[in-house]
Length: 308
Image (tube, rainbow, N blue to C red; front, side, top):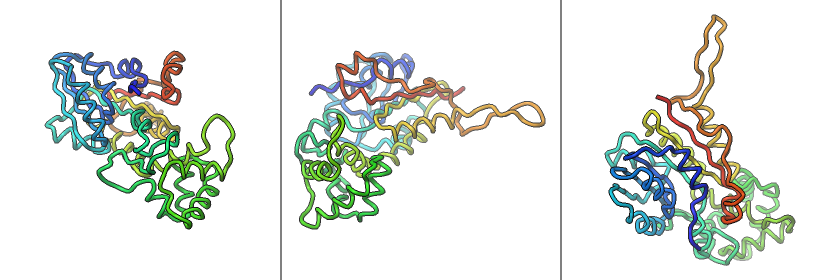
């Protein structure tokens, strides 16, 4: 399947691309957003693209190679290390940062990556296949209490306890090593109602745990904001309510507010560096995009601008 960047126009507009500017795409993927950033920024523009998936870096390198007059640096790494990666490239500040979170469509479509229950494959879910434990490792080694907490907090799964108990019982008879095994186990445990597969939240929770997605996001938000020049913009696309809440609260904390003082006057209260919200509410895809690209249905875009 061809990778289609989600909320492309809205994201580029939110970043307010500057001619010849310097940008960081902390979750490069197949380079769809990055390519448009470079085309808008034009001659003299510089991009640092970061991704944990070496296959994604290889494919995006081909896509970005056709943009003339620009400087491109692609780095195999985690977006949580965004500040160090960019400064190691000799860049002190940038005009914009983009994070497009979650799993990409090509990753979902490749059964051997283990992200989806739509086709049977190894229960892997690592975005960086060169290191770390797999989802199968977590399912095999975590206790019932820890599994239930993981499903409840990362997957917001109401049947977390029942599913954790079923996993522990099932693995006693043999390792749960494939996506089909796990999906069938969850479905037999909680039943199937509604339009979504009952294992959706379980797979989300395991994927987030395997890749430390919340920790990576929190570090990337702090690091990315610290890289921005005054007037620089930070755009983040999320696909789950848990990650959207983190981004919303982070930007709100740095947007702060003016507080009246009893002695008269007022002062600003909030985290530094200060930002202005570019999007007061999350931007979602138009109906036309949703019909053409189903992945966009759950996408939310938030953006902020570092103040001068």
